[in-house]
Length: 409
Image 1 (tube, helix red, strand yellow):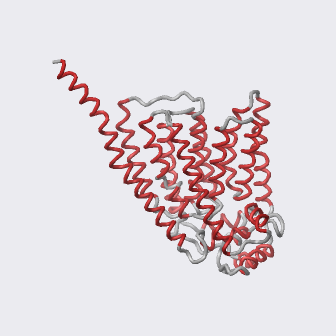
Image 2: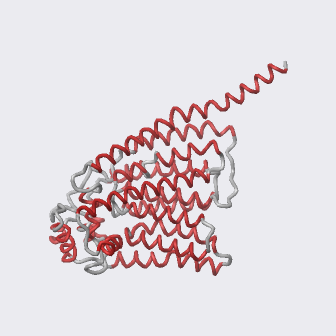
Image 3: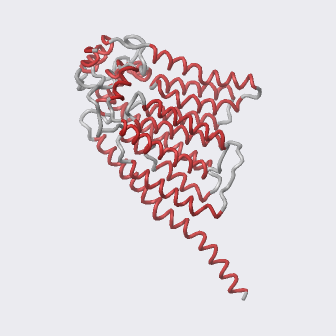
């Protein structure tokens, strides 16, 4: 009788472990394998590209700098010119494109590792890693969008998380986080919508009194906010844009005034952007919002649950804030997957920070099977969403922001 009882207990424990182990084998491993092969494919295509790994559109941003006056998104180009002593050539642009790819992949690895370390249950860590690694908003997006300044924003997010986790002087951490926000805003001003809440979340615990918390928040966010406001308020002249394009064309880089690129896009106003959006089918906009937004909410919610339900109301507020930012950007830009990518990366970083000192609430055992089914669904959706384009390529209006079109206006 004792042996039989012991046998039954052991079998029960093994039976309780088998579903999770089998789940990891039949869903997590194939999805991660698929994401890895997908990334290798796009990295290989980028390495074999005739111009640069970034392609002509993304790489054209490297010639945008402060040489001819202040212009939004000119900070990286100004730093590059300061290092080289002159505008970049094709070889330098190729190196920058490859470096941005390496940096964004390294930053995503750091964020994934931080999320795994923040997971209280060791048995959930593989699932957390898979949800981040296989997400259509992380690695697979980075390799498709390679060489763009979005990489700088993701690196800034990782830097904020790293600085918030260090045990250095609070003032040094606040200044470092402030510099990261400035770097992100100077590279892509719209990224402030995602960097500012994350920066505040990182620095507010550093103040011991309300006054100190306000001071820390102001130091961390206001310089980047000022740079973003100026970037949106100052519109470059057509002459400045043409000068930058001519400087780039002189290096042998292919550019045409009849085609939109990262330089000509700077001449687009908010009205132009809204007019472009109006030309897209409302059904396309709704479809992209539901599919991308739904994937964001599902995956972020599962991560929150696996991280022990830290600070429920803070997590809900931040998830909603990032979603509203992504929807707002979708109204003026049709690169929908990029905006939801920013939202997801910022949410992963926020969950890591929310876990600091938070009381975790483990899920009851009877809730485990449904959660596994939700995770399986999220991973399968993520794998399929790797094929989702950055913008709706099937529905493009006949408007744009080439130099020729800007001059016609």
